[in-house]
Image (cartoon, rainbow, N blue to C red; front, side, top):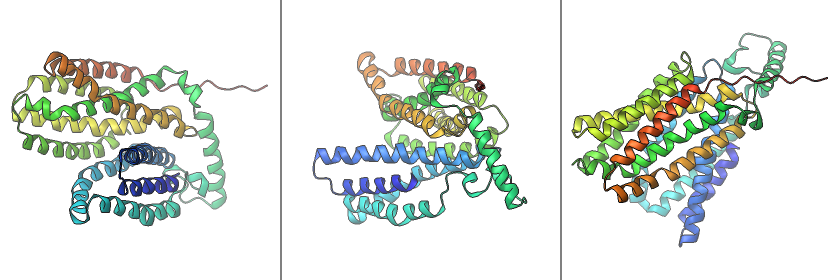
Length: 344
């Protein structure tokens, strides 16, 4: 899948480099969303949990750092490529890099799960003989199968719907606020230059706390951390409504980064921890769909509310109520118990 998605994403880059009208642009951007934000996100989120159990939190936190590093590094790199050879050249560079760097590395080094190559999660089989490793791998595979939920089984639990809701809310809220941040802070007299600085500050705090929360989630129940983060988001949204100072706005953005980084980690950890690994790809595809839908719908209510009320106060209060509801549902989302299957 990593190789296939890499090839398709490279094709999307080349299509965008050749855009000459709205139809081709639609196709190009559709492919970017499908194979970039969608599939390219889903593959590692399904792959990494297979290889780690006890250290899953920190492994996913290291994986998530790649997202944050690229968010900080790629905009100036893209600007350099565009200024050097134009935007078509920039797309072609990324298409070539995907073909000659990513795809070969994915083909050579990625393996679906440790049991496929006679290993165990967290390298638990270290020091054992080949026969012992093989036997342990078979037992581990059976244990995974028995403990895993199918999509139908997961959908019959309350925790599935609670977690799915909690996956969509951060995307909806963060995208809505991000799209309207210049307008929201402009009403408070904050300059556009300082707002741009704040947007670059947010990934820094997200970077730091993502790394820390990977270790926290190995010691604290994921639902408790998830719930605490939604409480934090509720408080800082209300703080955004009330504060007028530069220091207050800066504190909001830093805490926003904490929320953004840690919720991404919780969302990546909670699915394999709650529903197992055998059907994780299907389950995560539903979660990814809810995230993409949330990001698509997020900005709309902010725009309509501003047109209707003449300010953002009302929609921000509604946002605080939404994150408060997510806090309650995250706390209530206890790990589901799988009903045993009996055969005659």
